[in-house]
Amino acid sequence: MAKNEIHCNGAAGTLYGLGFIGAAIYYISAATSFWVGVLGFLKALVWPALLVYGLLKHFGL
Image (tube, rainbow, N blue to C red):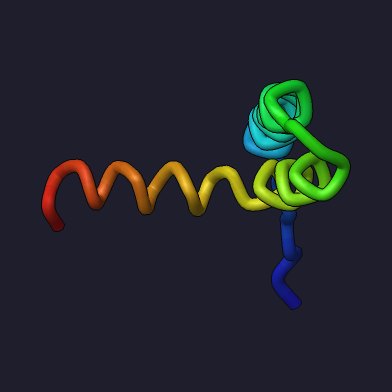
């Protein structure tokens, strides 16, 4: 049998985690009410999707 090797790289997870923390701080600090803060927290969870959407919209793709 062939030996299966698994290589993990934690850099992507670290980048996402730092981005999540930064986005959460930004959105929550800009919130004007509790529910806007909750919405900001949810936006912070999906910030990569929002970033890609904004870039594609900017480039007209």
